[in-house]
Amino acid sequence: MKKLIYAAVGILAVALLLWVGAQHFAHDQDAATGTDKSNRVLNLYNWGDYIDPTLITKFEKQTGYKVNYETFDSNEAMYTKVKQGGTSYDLTVPSDYMIQKMKKAKLLLPIDHSKLTTYKNINPRFLNQPFDRGNKYSVPYFWGTLGIVYNDKFIKASQVQHWDDLWKPEFKDDLMLIDSARDVLGFTLISQGKSVNDTNTADLQAAKGKLDALMPNVKAIVADEIKMYMVQEEAPLAVTYSGEASEMLTQNKHLHYVVPTEGSNLWFDNLVIPKTAKHLKAAYAFINFINEPKNAAQNAEYIGYSTPNTPAEALLPKAIRDDKQFYPAESTMKHLQVYQDLGQTKTEEYNDLFLEFKMTNR
Amino acid sequence: MVKKNKPWANVYLVIIFIVLYLPIMYLIFYSFNSGKYMHGFSGFSFKHYVELFNDARMIQIVFNTFVVALLSSLVATIIGTLGAIGIYDTKNPLVKNTILSMNNVLMVSPDVIIGASFLIFFTMLGIGLGFGSVLLSHIAFSIPIVVLMVLPKLNEMNKSLLDAANDLGANSWQVLTRVILPYITSGIFAGFFMAFTYSLDDFAVTFFVTGNGFSTLSVEIYSRARQGVSLEINALSALMFLISLLLVVGYFLISTAGERSKAKKKGASL
Picture 1 (cartoon, each protein chain N blue to C red):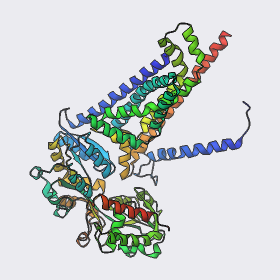
Picture 2 (cartoon, helix red, strand yellow):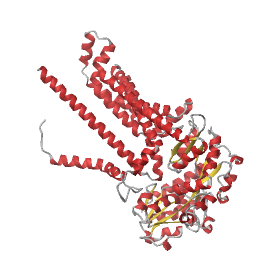
Picture 3 (cartoon, each protein chain N blue to C red):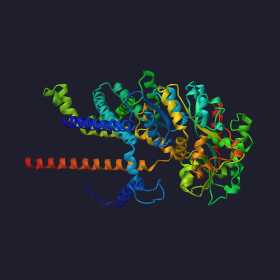
Picture 4 (cartoon, rainbow over the protein chains, first blue to last red):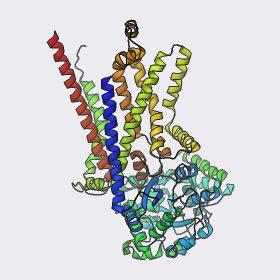
């Protein structure tokens, strides 16, 4: 009995010590930013590692708000937590189709454009998108594309300029696909001259039929690991997002990224204010802060995705700014398509077709 | 026991240990990489450790994680032990089996389901998510583990011990503190440590119930992994591995020292 009591007291003591330690570090962060414990906080709910941490410190120093930074790993997970409303987030960063879904579910607060001082910095090309006409609820944060990554040790640039090139018999067992129904069916639809938001069952069946013919070339259908595999040259060819690609490219000089000229998916991650937000002033301060050209440029350089901020783009190092892989030419940009929320039944139809494709015998 | 020389058994053991430890060693090795990635070792450097110690948010999360793990497993151990004694004392076999099965259902039900249920439960009650909700849910999912660790010890106990204590006039408090608890101490400790490790590495439940700026290691590392885990995490893992190694070695030294002194005492009294 004595032993147990000693152990329990010991554990409590250690826990207390650690708690004091944690408070100390929390306090340290406060002290570093000169904030007090009042209501001056910003609850930011963002993707993991999706902002340069030094920018958070800078924001705290400049404005006196303390940032509570929390992270999620998928739009759906974020949606669930915001919808349940157990915690109040002041800002979060959903992708395009999820903004539409959150809007439908009445989870967002409209944005007061009169409070945005740096909104004018955003390239009009990325505003007024179908998922949020007039940007009533969202401000662009980053954007990117879906494209083809290839390794120049094995494949020449001229060999992969179009989606149709993926079907070439010479690429047998060479291709890695990102595990996403929308993306894979999407590029197949584009290769057939259709829209990525096509909901016509006959078109979808035709796309599935064409996809089945791709199977001999497919080496694997993977998720985030695609980055590691490509860097380690497990496969010479992959279909993935531009942000993933930019990381691969910095790790392996032989990799290149192509956005096919006939079009591709253009995606957005946008800042939105959830209904549960309690610190609106802080939220607006942050949106304004992150869209200051210097900050946006620093963030874009850190993350590797493309910034929608025009003056920030000009501030980026020339090598990044002129990189056609991530800031494609106007002729390509013209053909890019944005995903829209398809609704429950059509989303299921996409998923089912993709599942059937995945089960195809090779 | 007869000691037989079995070389194959040893080879097998060595292979198992290599398989278990190699990934950890690989991870620790790269925490000293001066480069940014887990491939292409470009030189020895402590820069990821410096980075880690400068990351106040990360350190705070580490401390939070341990506070939750320690407190939740302590509370769960107390509740679970009492629960196990209660189940042990239950005379009606039907009731006993029902309670046990309910306990086991909680053990085998998937973490996501438990996590989602907690999220709905807490928001329904209007409890704000954060430290409290994480602690409560960790206590809840640790209790069945403790019960399962303590029950066998109780069943192992000779019933005549209890009868003897009662015959000699011990009241129920004395039976509990002087007979039962000392007998099942090892089971209680085992339960505590199991609950502790469960709480430390739980992701699924924790993910649903964190909020308001409170986060734990598993949630943080998982969401960072989308961008590729930075070597800062390697440095952190290396430190945590080292600490657990020291704890195990310390425990081993203390327990063998205790045994030796016991053996000495016995020798003296003979």
